[in-house]
Length: 329
Image (cartoon, rainbow, N blue to C red):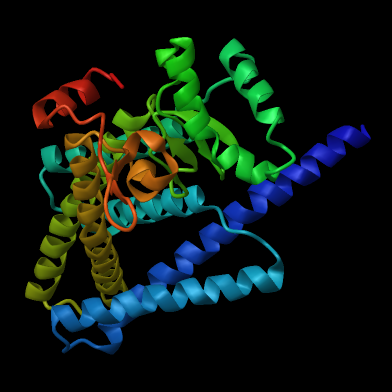
């Protein structure tokens, strides 16, 4: 009984409180954005967009202060989910009225697919490598001899290089490009990066889903921007008055600004990952290429040799795209 109560308390502390705080933060930030067009109705779109970005930054700082005071951590996946639900709720309650049924079905389907995809990537396996593997046993045994000269964290963070060398020596291609994630404390096949927003590593088994979700977010937010813009234009043409119409208009503009800010950085983020796919390079490998010997090219020189980057996995854009689509590494 005590063990069950202890588990419940741990679950509430690690999941319920962070999710509840994330919901509070989403509501505060979204309603703060809704106040921007109300306070600055005559400003240009660029000015309002800049103010909205500052409001989001101020909301993040306010949320950090609240977390420290309450000693509660926020949940990044919960923030993403609650933002989607908030936008969906505003769309259903205010914006969808008067739209063609086919367009309404498409927008609702986009939000539904996003939530299903988020659940799949949050609970899925990115390509974790089990320590029961005999090759990993060999790796652990070889690492024991170096434990006196390295700390545990240093040993784990550098084990990606040892995996690569072990794969070559033992003829085990399944261990190629296995990297260590410091957030998950695990080795991941085809590790690209750890995504806090999706609450999981991005590896070989969920890289396709990650790209689909990125594209899905951009499409859904662009659709929302288009729908909210039409709603705002109709509201202004009808010259509605009253607090209810004012609140609905402010919410529509505030959520539209939020989606616009999201699209601006998500398009850049998506372009970066498309670039990585085209040149068969992972984000972690591009940032930390000096840690992995296969990316190092030593060029003799005077008075010192020069270390340059090389990509042994690059097969040309078409070959790299084919490998990605066929999940080859």
